[in-house]
Amino acid sequence: MKKITAITLLITMALGLSTWAQKTQNTSQSSFERFLLDAGYDKNGNKLLEEEELVDIISLNCSNKGLSDLKGIEKLTNLEILNASNNNLSVVTLTNKILIEVNLSNNKLTQLNIAECENLTGGYAKFNARQNPNLKCIKVSSRNQLGATKAFRQNWLKDDTAQFSVNCN
Image (cartoon, rainbow, N blue to C red; front, side, top):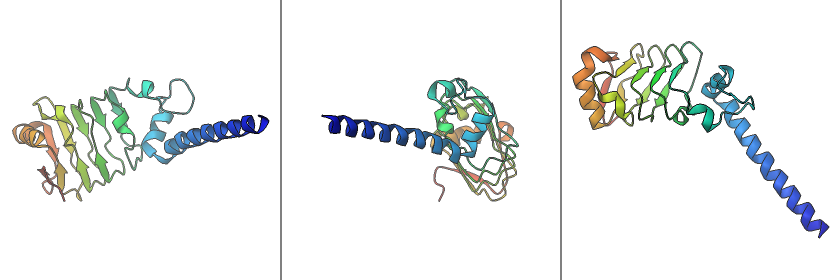
């Protein structure tokens, strides 16, 4: 009986440590998640970004922070406005369906996917991916592409070398 209790305790401790290590490791690997922690979005001070803390973020300015990724941004489900300009981002995929304003200007983008950003289609939406000379194709949905065509002159800004397409290879 003591052996079973001891083994059960060891397994429970190992699983708990594994889960804790995974959460801590994931946080420390992402420059974006480090930014969120440093910026005070860890409201309960446990050094982890929890869903309850992230859903409160509606507008986020992470410009000029030296970010190399936006890993974890999909957890900000209520995000409407994102300014991630002037960073070191090269590959960005945004899946936030309610984003209405995105600024990714002056990065090192080579791949950008905004196909799932449904609210970027309206004339009120703003999109800026200028000053990314290596960005050749911005992946959009057919609905986004139509919105981009109509609103492009005013609200959708990109370099002349980049095109909007449903198919980016």
